Image (cartoon, rainbow, N blue to C red; front, side):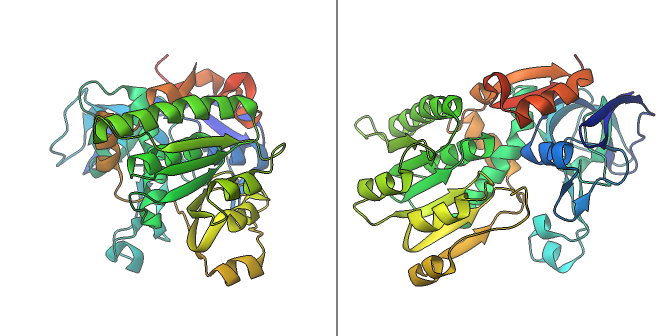
Length: 363
């Protein structure tokens, strides 16, 4: 089979390698669609995320859907040819975190595309059958791949314990920020404010989220008003001041930080109301978080950090199937396996209006 290996910073090579054999309880999967994630780009551009460093060639990619190609010994409930979304995390199942229901925090987790574990920018991969979630009829392979970032968004919203009628701000309108905002709307927020420095992303966010807000209102009652939305340019507007005015000087109940920029944690601290919550999902390039201690201390802010996701695939499938969250508009670019490097550069440099690029190994 063909697989795309990352050998070092901006060094991607297409390599011939053996098709993996599924062990007991595993399935062989023919990879259908793989999303290019911001974490993939961090490894591509920087060679590391924090202490996780590329020291040997590794296959990137973890947001994926696939077709079942072969069943390992003892596998039941899946069929050859079935399209499935695949959870990329294989926790140990035995440690304290796993036993307490937090497999996303497992210290021994094997996560696709996290060095030294190979990912799925490849034609085939083998995974535990329990990681495979059959897609309902009508959901595409690309939608199946995007269930993973939607899962991160759902986990972020679950951590916030948002209530209907709450107000929220989302910093960053990349895929995670957009999906977080969509999940916030589905959870019943009455006001959602977005900040994003890139003009094309702001335009996309305005249209995408307005459609989501209208759908939420229509699903509630025939006379329900759509939630209030506003999108700001943090470079050329006083976004903090304007959001403060829109909330009557109170601030928002919850701020979701999804940009990973050096300045966004401090912006979140300014935007959140006293007693509010900050949910930090962005991955900063310098592996540090900076915010004024006096601000968050005096406000008594609850701060939670997002570590991937847990137990979200069934909920994500239901939300997409019911129309609560739209994934089709997110996919703006699709490339074949031999153009992984091009896909990485596109996402890293915000080229050609990219929102979400996917790689389709079968094309």
